[in-house]
Image 1 (cartoon, rainbow, N blue to C red):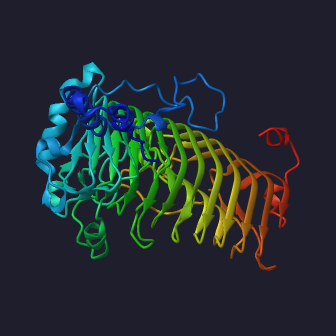
Image 2: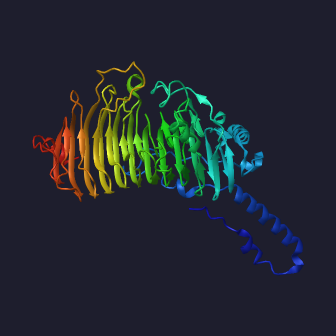
Image 3: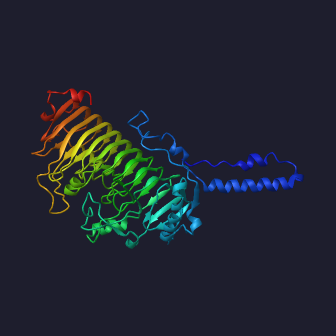
Length: 480
């Protein structure tokens, strides 16, 4: 998906055949050289921008068309090398990146700017982006996360979490970070951002972690964001985390982490609206995609839901978690989520809805269709009871509401267990609709396990649990 550079010189020089025209040849040569230099410095992801239009204009709700407004043309394009960057994989470029972005920030009201990262290995600590800005990684470019924890400073916890997700108090900032931004693009010619997360995983494994690990990319309170056509590797914690954001597109991404790397979720939209995730391949030590919206009393108080989320054509594997998870942090509410064309293999679960007593909030209007699974332990799972709370202030009377979940056109090969659907005694999950679900290769002794759920099933094999054989008022399911 490289941007093709046009060599204007060959066509022009081919017409020059008389040696007596040396002044003209010199002039044309100079123009050609200047044109080539400008071309190599102004790489722009035109292909990736096509089809992205004003929100609400277009037709197919299952695609990313209409999620983004058009980005202004970047009038200023520079390379990290212009600021003294050294791509040897050893020299720290933290100050260089920060200097470059401070300089380019001044062009925000003139269409914005683009920082090109050429081929090389560019070691850096945390980078704060700016509005109207494109970070463009050329082919062969690798941004490496610093191995010095001090270059991942401690920042305030998210208000919808009340503390760091893993440890009390603050949390390490992400490698690529931004707050309150508009019109940001992170893209390239399949360059790589590598968080070098092993150091952080070992702190977790050794129980010596003092503050919650940083994400690879976290954008907060931001709008009109595109992340595309790159490879992200070895995030210390969750890989892509848009939180309190709107109009976000993540597409054509490869996200990789060792399958035992703890909590290395792929893409986690959190208290965000109008998010489209499309055409991504993910291998991780946690959920490939997880939709979230805050944690217990802090999420309830903030009441910032995740809504209008589309996940389409995502594939990958995770031995410990699910292809797509909803929750368990869902206290601000999650609604209007569409998951289509998911392909998951060698994983703990295919699709999973997670919540608990004390979460409060709600999960509603979830549509899941066209799912293919191979060797997934539990293909469909609703779970409760993780007993995972931020502090003693959680409310045991805050019950989550789960209602209106449609799952259709599912094929699972060689799962070891039938679906497990566990609602909550005082807050049963209602309005579960399953149609055309086929589980092949289950042992005859493998039975559905359902508690505190109700709904309807049609063309489901093997026979679902009695709680899904309710034939009363099924019109909502036939039209879902």
